[in-house]
Image 1 (spheres, rainbow, N blue to C red):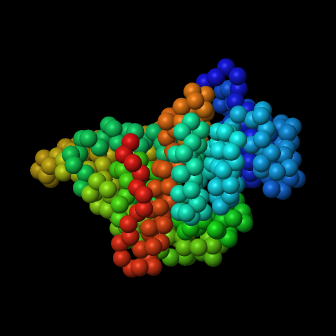
Image 2 (cartoon, one colour):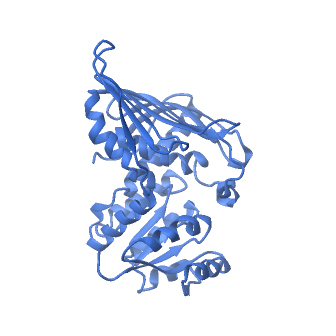
Image 3 (cartoon, rainbow, N blue to C red):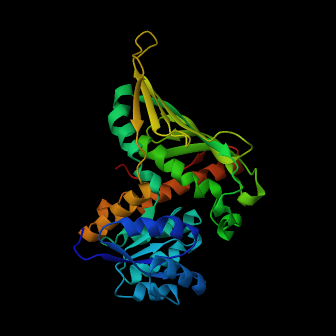
Length: 351
């Protein structure tokens, strides 16, 4: 990292900025929250007071015009992400944006094009699940032990939480982003799935809206074909009645199987695996306890390192990758309309 602290302008000063972004930025080395902006200036001023920030802007463009600002951290309703990226390109200002990448695939594609036509400007989408340390363990340490991957079952389900403070935000209650909670929370799940098994090619899905407060369909059951040829199922939703929150990822191979249990109730996430090409050759199950890492700190550290090194290739969650995650949701919704498999548009390139 550079010796001089990077000055960060925080754009969007709502609940998540206060609860997660601000404390994360404050604990990172060589980073300092410098200024802020909100479409309602009084909210920005209130946030600034809490954060010890003295500079508050009157317009979004002022943020990017400020020569003192090194980096812009954007937490706007995602339909405004395109506007922010355009300003970042105009003023050559490194930018990170909260997920999902955009409200729809057209906007997301525009952000990818802006990113890839700006070869030196760091642009990162803050999909923090991409930084789970379990992904590296699963992909690089355990997956090679089970031979060729054949199939998977990914399931993350839970009860409706009416006390969720983020439900009160108007952009979630009246979503402009496709799929509402299916894209807002679903890209987290898809970051884990694709981080381990690669890009998705086809999906056939059924979705349903269980809660009016979701603003849109809030559960999805689907059958998936990966670009590698692996097949599986993807189930996601937290709009059910009373039930334990359960999150499991089962991977089946020609020489064994893996089960990753990352249910929130567990003190540590658990990877269980066994090897063998038949029931008769099955080994004893091996268990790996995975410590939960601070994925928000990890995603910011990754982005700020790219900024300090002036090397955008270091960024893990590039717009093209985030586009792929949103396009899986888009394909699922298209599948619901057509009643058949839908192709996931512009799959991410192999890393």
